Length: 226
Image (tube, rainbow, N blue to C red; front, side):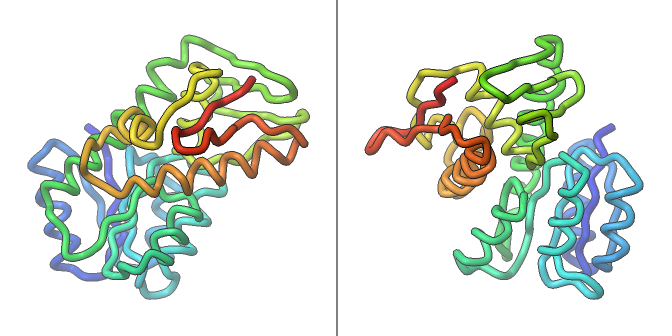
């Protein structure tokens, strides 16, 4: 059974999320405090984590950032903060998705399923392909690790998924819509601007080596050059 961690201090909302997810076959655990949620995330293995931003003890942004120090698990923000700047900040800290309150429980379940499925497909079931290497970058798929210049490169789960997809489909131009469909799998549900945020973060990290691998094809999309 897939395990979901819900970090949410509003009891009614947390129980609503839990009930809908459990009906759809997920096992859920609730933390009503930022520090408690961070402790559970670090000490246990979850298929996905849902985080509110306004939490007691430690806000959701900081919880996400600290989880990302050593966990690749998919993360979804679920928050009443609906400004674009909050969405950009959340995605920039390593979240895979951002849902604003009030929300549709069925949409939440759909996004949870899609993120878990894509993450497993790209980093689990395809791990038999072992390794991909280009320039000074080595992707060890079995170990779920990326090294650049012999140093480990810290990537969020979605940045890692993007890198795997690009490396396996290099020298092709992909539109934001196509990438959203391939990697998020949510069709019309969600904000396509999340693609731009994640690509920019991945590009910045790869360019630390002094080489540019992700090329913007203006008016069309992106091309990954190996």
